[in-house]
Image (cartoon, rainbow, N blue to C red; front, side, top):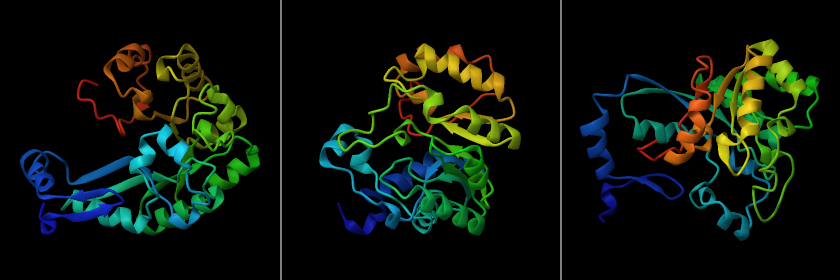
Length: 255
């Protein structure tokens, strides 16, 4: 393919004539003038302290196509992919102990304040209530992005702690702080069985009951990337009108 039709975006991704044609035919007249992307990872690549091992990269397909991306690079890419649109991000660092978490949260804060974006702090389960409060006081930070991988590190897989309870990586004292502030929580649920695991359903309902002032967003439709997972899990929470969902990385049209 002629390289002249190609605008490089980031890592392995290019924007090509076929993408421009799809935009013109399907999206130009459909998308609104202002867009909020509510699930975006951003960080200074220099804050990645360790590269993933080959074993870890092979264990998780996303690592084959994902490299840290700066705010400057993200802003440039959004300008290419969404021409003539105002795009505001809800962004956060990589919830991975191979990154400088404190540095990444500070970077998110700085970039959000400078660009008019909104940020979430990647949280660590070891934080006290006071430490949680301190991070939530950073400019531009409106909530938390916890992840079970923040419990502990493995060189071989990101899923060492996938069987954890939500409250193992998001303890109640942190939820209390977030609830008192009416903060935002983007929750990537654990368990190999994904959202449909009974513990996840029970614990999501507990969060909604005990911490009603948190803006709770279930990431990736509860990791329901396939129709069976979606059919199994989503109806169990569908009656909760105060629960929010993002469909980041859900590419299956049936879902």
